[in-house]
Length: 512
Ligand SMILES: *Cc1c(COP(=O)(O)O)cnc(C)c1O
Image (cartoon, rainbow, N blue to C red; front, side):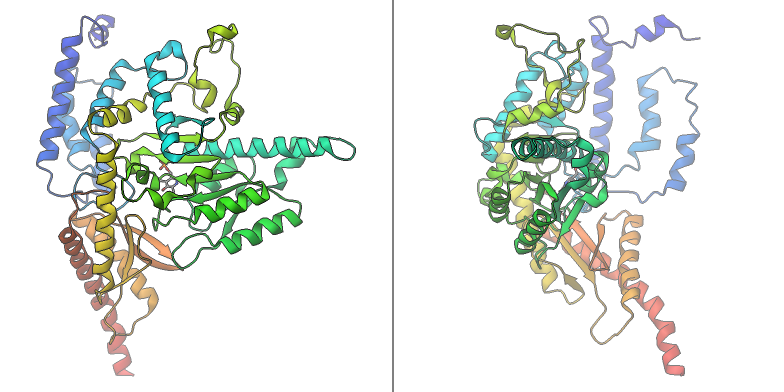
């Protein structure tokens, strides 16, 4: 029976530093070797094929040895993992990662600082704060800005909506106190009046946030988009006006700087103007578009973002950082106090001259990873311009890909991209008429067949009720010929599917 002594040999400390080095190096060597010979983004493995491998492992019988465990891991994970670094991984908003950030990941997990309080992180707290300031400055949020690293865009959006909700309640209470009887309505009377206005192409985490915050999905009012999938400001103005007339409180307008499906950027200056006029909180969800903050040529696409009250950035999308790395920024640091709760064991009272920076006061998490270290080493080793250049490259590639698709009779392509997504669908040759539902199924089939082959991974989405295919380009290593190659494969799969399924229809019509 392995006992406490055996367990202690695995604790990382001064006496086991060498074991740590060997163990982690072994893991790094294995990943490096695996990546070096990965020639497809995916093997096409199915859950049914993989599940028995994993359920067959007896967790009551440890292998005791890192080498043996890594060997086992090859079979149950590394062999069939989805590899985002591969140039034909074109599906979701997952980026290849930069090595300086991987170095940061190795350091941060070993030291294991927790960024909730100074006495659990010391310098980590200051590094995180410095990066928040750096990001806020790039956005242009002003002197009073602040923010916090989060686990992802979903959490950043949730926190932003929490702050917006509580600011809106505060405002309603203040107005009530200043008028008439001075009677302050209870929270339960204010919450049902709150609304969030966001475009129909915005991220579903806004709806989730509304639900978690006790407002319900219905509190989110979708604002229609124009042809380019950007929020229609005329429609937004109409909704703001309607809410005002109907005694509803617009607690936030959420603009998206880089929609998940189309990479479209809402007209931020116009939206900011409307928010100013109606006194609404402006949140800009730049989970995807934040990479432009580092661009030396396209920063202007984000113009207007500096007028936001809060901003979501996902470094793990367009700053080439490993999951997770995200932040929520605010214009006025005082608003972060809505996330503050006094706990004696975490924030003991201190004298004014002895203020200790405790990041937990600004976060909805308590124990929190030092994810900021990855961005820190990225900026210290590569610099922001290099990150911006990588993102610019994929935006350029998307523009080239769009031209390719636009002139390809096999495909129909939606909106010219502002960022790096391409949304398109296979269409049968003009002389073949077929049921639109069948074309939908052919596109669905093409995506699945491609993934099953492991040659490439692409995403799908629904536009105006029809199935489309989607490339999200985040890898500068993806060339135009990779794109052309994948388009050929998709057309082949879709064409074969149609041929199989149209034939019976045609012969049927010939017979009748
Ligand atoms: C990805 C995305 C999110 C959610 O971010 P996670 O990091 O996946 O939680 C939010 N908003 C937009 C626009 C996104 O693209």
